[in-house]
Length: 73
Image 1 (cartoon, rainbow, N blue to C red):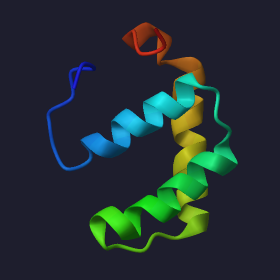
Image 2 (cartoon, rainbow, N blue to C red):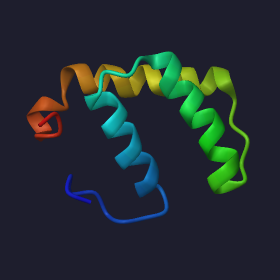
Image 3 (tube, rainbow, N blue to C red):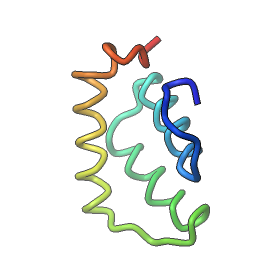
């Protein structure tokens, strides 16, 4: 992974979420993606409410800190 994170089973999420953020995808679509992806890929159901909270934090990070990490290019 180019952002300096260690490789692990979540790489598929990081790559896909970053791609979606770069494309300007909204919070609702990110939540839908994650809620659908987790059961298929990890065999784990996730709470839509908790996922919304997580996506809120991800988007705040993206809007405020991602540029300094060179991830928006």
